[in-house]
Length: 359
Image (cartoon, rainbow, N blue to C red; front, top):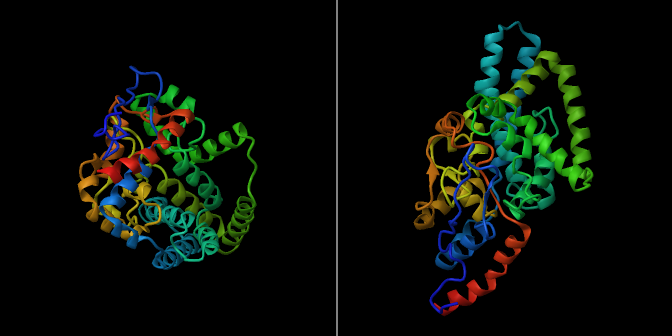
């Protein structure tokens, strides 16, 4: 290797040479020959901006937001359980209010799984459970397990639980109606993917997942007793709307579906980051998992020479629109890598450190 050649050809942005997978032209995901880009970009940014580490920490305000959301949802559930209402009022409220705050609860659970709410890490487990009160399905602890695996093995075939299953990419391809229906059942797909991974890897429910299951059953029973069937149905619909065809759920597509060649993670910089607690800053989050949601804009501004050069989205509505209507993108629009290539790419970290010290 020449003295002036960086050990990883993707530096400093860590954008690859692979071409994105196109439905009806390509049969499978795009294939990368290196490790995921975020750890190396993190080291590169820290070399230039060591003050980024001052952004690490927790934000207790996330818990207060959770208290407010639970109060809103339980009050609305009680209202619909004890008062006459029209179905249009019920559905509109479940979508506009319930879907929005349910998407926010997903962000809270995400922050809890990274221990970014309370300084004592074990308390974040309970914060995740608390955020699960108004989500009638036990999500928090399973999400924690699979999300950490996603960060650890991003794009690694057979190990990243965020990757679509074979039937998703083979059946749906670029068909607009199929993609619309797929997004509408996205809440189910999270459960299905987890179940498939558990079966393939002989995994069993963890202690905390069992606790989450019991907690959700008890919570649902109490909500049913005090808010009635209509109140519990309101919470179910809020969950469904908030995780499917809702602007606040578009980040599921925005984050890792490949709209460009060589780039596997995308951020969203738009006004909806305000109510959605900056969940759109996804490149920043993957690079620096210890930075809480409230500090991600500061991270982006500090290292903007890196993030501004990456492709990004400015509208979640258009993310869903382009994904559904363009036949050149679909569930197969992801990138994968072999475990061997991933490990070989990681081995370059030592060489990169020596290269940077000599330059």
